[in-house]
Length: 206
Image (cartoon, rainbow, N blue to C red):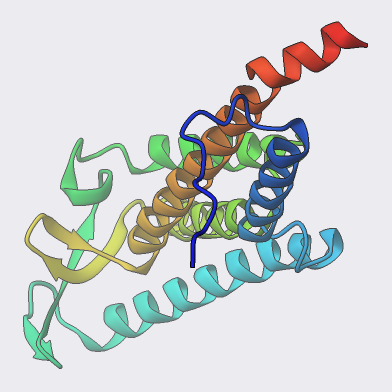
């Protein structure tokens, strides 16, 4: 049985095909950023719930460490090393003696994040999760800095001793990078489709 041979040069891609692919890409983008699966009001609640949970877990864990673990005591649970130090600087012990100054910086950072949440480009599932972790972590450490003048750290890592708030901030940064990656990729795809030769030809014909 002979099948008709497909021509190698099929000419420019039809505009309808480009629009179809752009529509699919847009749907994937909106799903990943939470604009389709979750309503705007629920996404807003996700931000506050995430921030509150981070603050509660951070403060409760620090309370138990301060109450039941001696300074510089070390122990291991499930392969994870723990200790108890009071850090008067930033994460990792950098710039000691400036705890309250970093507390003020944390407050300004939270205000900046709340401002960013009002912009159109900073909405969606990933970005609100990111902001929730960032704000929760910043507030968790700021509470320590203003109340005690130090931050309680207890989770031993290769790069220093951190706490739950520090890990929440790290997770928030990762989610923010992922969100920005999807936004930039989607905008580039949209720009290529709008500037394609077939689209320009259609506009000239009209």
